[in-house]
Image (cartoon, rainbow, N blue to C red; front, top):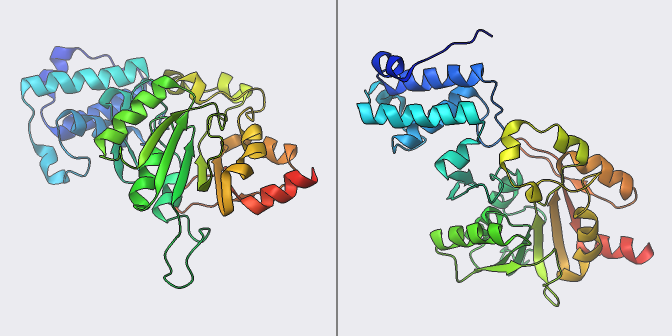
Length: 314
């Protein structure tokens, strides 16, 4: 691909409209070989998101407004954020301090991973058909939910929205991550139902039980960590790396989860590419690998009784 050099003055003198800057940004991104894995999938989508956000316009702004001309000050800030994304390979969400999950907006910065888990689809579908449902009313009986390795708090908060009668514990070992999670809990007005707990997995949860335990823990193995695109190295390593096989947290999580689940309770965990190492480690554990209409893989579901049967016989 041919390299194209620009001067700020040339860009400002030549480009005028929102469409101009989206097109130019996309060309710049292609030139710099950016990686898109934090919300958008193409250079055009990434450029459009950054331009609209910087101009204080909604992501779904109608394209009829894209012919609008920018002021000189607007041009400067748009050029700056597009150059930063291109030259520094920083995920767009860290530049805007905003990410979306399950239809909800969250504050993010470099202390937490950028939300992108397919678990959002499960939450929006109320984990059907896996929940314990009242046979008379047809309503779910979910009262206690645990989000283990909560990071930004997006999974915990989304669960609180979709299960308005439930109390949610948002747990992480990282104090930095919990600071961000608390900011998001306050942003969504959920301090009365979403609780922050600092804990290394279940260590500080003695005696607590849940209807649902859901987790998107660190699961990247050593080989994948060494090959990650530059954008992922902007994220905290503690939220990604999980040892040689990617199972450093998932194995103890499986061994301890049952005692923290009510009868009929479910455990849902995302393990990504470490799915194969996990199945090799537990060849007789009856993992149910979930499928997603919106894309995504490497997420399993187990019921408490399956965990009890497996580990009691082991």
